[in-house]
Image (cartoon, helix red, strand yellow):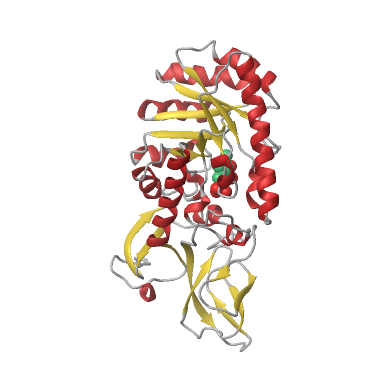
Length: 370
Ligand SMILES: Cc1ncc(COP(=O)(O)O)c(C=O)c1O
């Protein structure tokens, strides 16, 4: 026996008719965020390459590219596949890629789109070149430098130069494109003054490497990096030529909690939840828990209900406390703590304009993390 699971939403549905839990996007706020970021990048003369790991949704990338983004970043090779299939012509894998299967896929993608990738070890280069040779494709290569994240990335110009030497041995397959310099910890520093200072320090570390390379006659055509929390300072820093923010389009609760500077983005992403129990008068239980949104960066915030807080999260439940509490059957919009892992929990994004469903976008790269 088989059953048909009803759609959570249909085009034209009002918000109240959407089944819960559902991931929903306020298109007006989302588009204002895209336009603001694009206008700032354009005014600064910088390329905008938004990070697609934030949303994993090709239609989001196409909306960014339609407004002037040069392409997108992906964090993993498989994540890039639905974007290239959807027509994104320029994808930067902002990460190191190791292993024959991954490299073969990367080299295949490079036959359909312009692909770039990071390296931080000379031994990563020859397998990359061999994969490209096998596919008859070329990729652009960035050397990643460590500017304080202490994750991937070489220490400085001397290490970049020795990797460049190996890259230059494969002129038919690889072109050196520049540096990737990303400092993730800066992004979420809450006091604005401290965040500015940390972003400027990361920029200064990057500039020192760019200058040292220039002194050796090596130009970096592109210096790529930056995220939603540092972008305001990266725009003016004179170091980056390309910016990679992702979350700015959605603004999760964690980003909403940092002290905003002059560049202010709006909350556009919500988990629509439904009140499923009011048996205890002190709390309302909603049907969206850890299987609908991540909480490693903090609990969700309740949207538009002053005095009500989401206080306890479990797999499929959330306890709302405060007053006035919603009643059984009410729908409650929650701002997820962290947008990236939240997108990864959903198959589709229900897009609303003026409270009515205008589109339903597949989160096509959901789960693609190899
Ligand atoms: C390499 C890289 N670039 C850009 C970003 C974008 O960050 P955000 O979504 O915070 O703007 C990230 C996020 O972790 C990242 O790892």
